[in-house]
Figure 1 (tube, rainbow, N blue to C red):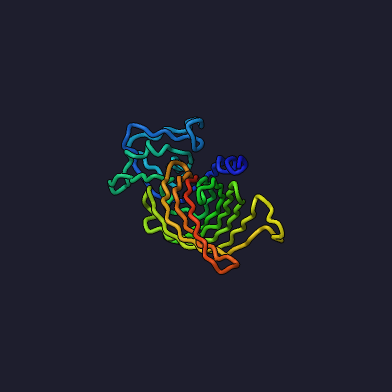
Figure 2 (cartoon, rainbow, N blue to C red):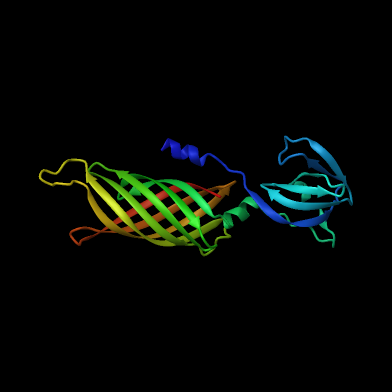
Length: 243
C-alpha cells in the first residue's frame, strides 16, 4: 500500500497552451521573473501602459513576451489588473480547475468496506470525452472467512464535468476470485472464480493542485458456477491524481 501512496505523492508539471494575447499594463509596474516561481529573480519591470504578450500558462504563472523580444514569467495574480488592447479586463481562470474538467488520465487508491470486510483498491482511468470515462480497478478484501480479489472494468458518465463536486454513474463487468481461509476437505481447487456485473454511483470532489477526493458506492452481482447470483456491496473513499 505504501508504494501506491508514494506514487500519488508525485505531482507532474502540466502546461496549458494559450492563444497569444496582447495586454496593456495598468498598474504602476509588473514584475517579470526568469522562471515560473517566486524563487526566480526579476529580470524586467514592465511599466504602466506598456504592451505585453501572453504566450502560455504553467500552473499559476504566465509566459510573457515583451516588446523588446525578451521573455519571462508573470504571476497570475499580478495580471488581474491588465487590460486587452480593446480595453476589456483580462479574465484569469483557475488553471487547475480547468485541468480537472479536461483531464485525460488519472490514477487512484481507495479504502472501503466490501460486505463488512475492509478493502483496498487501486485504479486507472481514461477520460475519452468530457462526459465519458473508462476505469480498470483491482480490489482486495481479506476477511475472517475468505479472501476476495476483484477486477472490474467500468464505463462512467459524468453529467457535470465542470462542477467542483462532480457526480458520476457507471456500469461494468469483471471477475471475482474467492479463496477460503480454511481449506475445504475434499474441495479440490479452493479458489472460486465468478463473473461480475457492477453498477456504480459516486462523487468526485476537486481538492487542489491535481488531487481529487472520491466517494463511491458500487453494487456487484456475482454469477457463480452454481448459477446463483450473489450480490456484493462496496463502499469506498479514495484519492486520485489526474493528468
